[in-house]
Image (cartoon, rainbow, N blue to C red; front, side, top):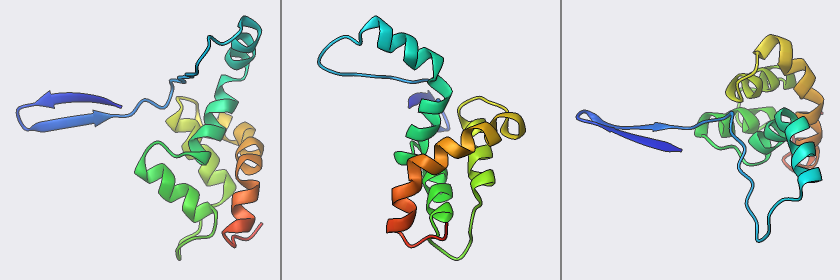
Length: 114
């Protein structure tokens, strides 16, 4: 998250198109290449497993069956695609199976319908 101060207040900007990996050692080059190749899929899974912003958390919760308003996998995938800088209609369907797999255990644990 980036903070920009203005006279009227502070603007908080979350960048969904950036992936940051940290650890005790440098990432081996072959793993870096795989991460680059599958960047969008990794980001989609991370976004739903650990939502970086409140509205994404709300979308995931609604997909999992929490609350009175439900979100379909197609809707969630479109929002995730847009958040990470992809086209919602073109790339959302491609990310849907990855999102479903990432949340598969969570959906059953939270009582959501399959």
